[in-house]
Length: 218
Image (tube, rainbow, N blue to C red; front, side):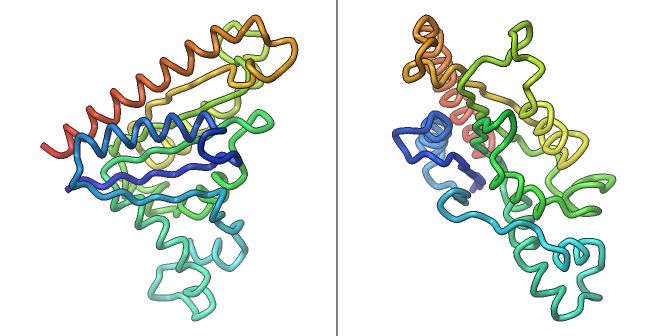
């Protein structure tokens, strides 16, 4: 039985969030293909992870058996979140672009889960090789050759921290762009491009969800 770790971070609710709708397409395809699978779901907007504090940060560099009671209590959440990543066979993350970067709630999750010598910074990180799908939605266009290409800080960062330099996951990005075109004055000429990008994102999510579930369930 395969396990999917599904993380949403959008501040907008279902029906108003492109990243949530696309991760939902992935998950629906996953569950249809693998109904007996397990899903660990975290909505970091509805239930945010607290920012990493000093005691919990220091505890990450000390063997658990040597923790003080205070360090053990502070490290408990980090251990739980890291264990969820390790238990998952596949990872799905909704990561909309806010102010040119990832949501602060996602950064807080990463700060807890990055445990040096375990999930990262080890010869073989504890979740290495697992497939990860990131839905990186954004209101504008930041692709190569666009005027705002240099403002793209989401994909390079997540590629490093989730990929070979960090967790060692096999990361694939799905990028629905121009999500603000239908509601923002001056972007009217981009509406059709936005619709096409969203359609492609849903198709890619459904295809990948189905394929990963079938592969892992085999």
